[in-house]
Every structure is written in C-alpha cells, then in structure tokens.
Length: 458
Image (cartoon, rainbow, N blue to C red; front, side):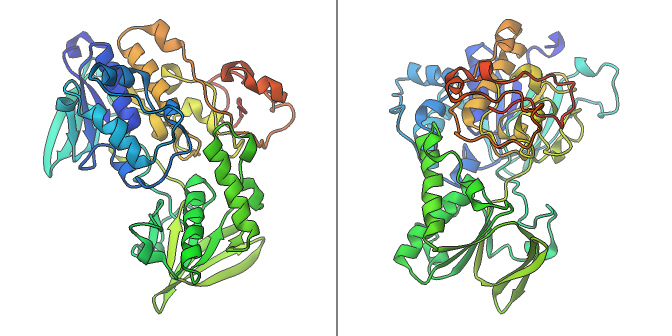
C-alpha cells in the first residue's frame, strides 16, 4: 500500500460474518480498520432471518483469526457439530466478536456508506490515482460524514437488495404497490408472523434454500391451521431439480431440506407450478392475482392473500460509481470468478479456492468480497468469504506468499448438473475422487478466458 496513506485504516463495508472476519485478520496483522454497518446493530442482515437454522455446523461458520481473538478473551467455542440459527450465530459468535475491546471502538453501526471514491478524483482520472487515499461518504445516525482509508473491502452482502418476483427482473409498479402483502425473505410464519399467514392462501416464489425453508415452515403452519393453502411457483421445468443432493449431501441438514421438500410435494399439501414465469401481479378486493405463462400457455393464479418471494438478491453497486470495477455483465459477480459460479452452466454448491488474485479489481486496494462477490449467483458459503478476506489481508500487508496460497475445504453438495458439452465438462470425476481436496478435482481457471465457459464443476 502507498506510503503516504500508511497511517490510515482499512475501511470495511458491512458488519456481517465476512466483514468482521476481515477486521479480525487485519488486527492479527497489526493493521487498523474502520467498519461501517448500515443497520443499527451488528450483522443486520442476519437479524432479519434470526429464526432460521443454518444448514452448516459451527465448524464452517467460525473464522480462524476471529476464533483466536475470541479465545484470548476467554470465549468458549460452541460445539462444532451443532448447527446454529441465525440468531445463535449472532448471539454466540458475531456479537462477542464485535464487542471485543480491540474491535468495538472501530465499528460504526447505523452507518450507511453512500459513496466511495479516490480523494479529489473522479473515476475518469488516472494520473496519480493510486497515490491517493479512498474517501468514503457515510450517513451515520442521520449525519453525513467522510472518512479516509488506504484500502476498502466491500462485504456489504446482497440480502438487503432482493430481486423482484417478476421473472424478467424488472420492478413493476404493480409489484411495488403490493409491498404490504409481499415479503422478500424468510418470514417467521410459525412464530412472530403466524397470524399473518394462518388460514391464508400463501404463494412462495423461488427454488433456493430460502424458498424451501419458507415452504417447510408453511407445512408446519398448515398442520396447525388446516385452512392454510400453499402454492409454489418455480422457474425450473422439473420440481425434482430443487431437491438437491439429499442423502449424498455432506451437510446433513442441507440434504434433509431436499428430502423433506420432496415429501411435502408428494403429500399434495402444496400446489406446484413448474416452468412458471411471472409477468405481473394484479390486485382485486384485497387479494392478489398472479399473471404468467408456463410452457407457452397463459396462466393466472387467483385469490392469493400473501406472497413470499425468494428469487435471490443482487448486489448494490450504486455507491461504487466512482471506483473502477470489473463486474460480470450477466451475474454481476466479480469478473474473474464468474466462470466458476455461473448458475447457467452448473448447479454446484462449491467452487474451487480463490483469493486476492481472482478478487483483485482495477481500482488498486479495493475489493468486493463475501456474497456480494458472487453477485446474483446463489451458491456462496461463509467459509468461502473467510478465505477470501484472509488472502486479501495477506496481500494488503505484503505477505504475497500467504495471499497466493489459497486453501478451502467445502462440503460436497451431492449434486452437480452441468449444461456443458462433453469437451467442456472437463472435471467430471468418479465418486471416489470426490473425497479428494476440492483443488485437486477441479479444473483451473484462466481469468482471461471467456466468462461464458465453465471451468469448475465441484
């Protein structure tokens, strides 16, 4: 990093698991940081789904540098095989980490970053750019402030910017007008929001783990409130494509989600609409009518009371207009990792190890990490983000050997559907090979190759 900026901190945007892990790694290297969390408490996005149980056990949810800092304060590691809820993740890990005396003074909550730039220069100007610090414009507790930093790590995530339910990805006036009847996320339908959904016709849109959780919670509600009606829209042509690896999944809870979902579908407690593309929403007499098409036929689903939309999220790039970025045009991920995670090419839940080199942006010392680095791709795991920031911090502190040595052990999903030719499907392996380290069973990627070619199926 520049000598002129050496006394400045590294700015971290986002106070979730990956942002706090970045702070822990910086502290372990003797570097100062300043962290901005937009919510009024740490890990604000996770607080929105605190009732949901993760499918990964503690061993995949705790960053190594953060663990060392916590243990120095007398913190006891949770049982690594236990599986926490979002609330437990915050209460037992992220909150204690953020409250450490070495950590807490540098964390700003209710502090939304509204713009990032080089001090005194627009994005267009090149000369002298790398010698200048970054300038972060922040609205903190309603007051506008500016902070300088020698590097920026954007770990702000994507949860707060969901995709619309309409299939073309465009927010329509009709959908926006239904904000009181559509929830984007995983509501607590058997807990705090039970009254909202009990005895109602509820439509779930989406085919990821969030949608599965919502459907399984609605099944519990229907057992208690039989008048509850469940409809489910998916864009996939076959519902069994949603079931995942089931018994083959290395993460037991993730596999069980698919098993329980299949049992729910077979029970006929849910009406499934496959290959359904939503064109618009209409409202009449307080109820929602969904207009769309399936296999070329116009279909309308009537008399819906509530919609739970789980069609993924997208990164907010609006406050990064004045920094130079390389973002994939299709899935809006960091450009170099797009071939590894493109859901158009494969459905693998894991990806070969990647670090500072792949996450490097045209703007020197600026990085996008965590789920935001994956853009609209749905396959991110926390442990991936931990390795990302470990590698980046090593690079920022001049330890290039550690930065380049990226190692990552991810649980096998048990499923890997490819839309590739035989020639492109270069890393198909026998079942016994899948027990080897991820790096040894996946193809390598040349970031300069076409982003439309997949290089990994693991």
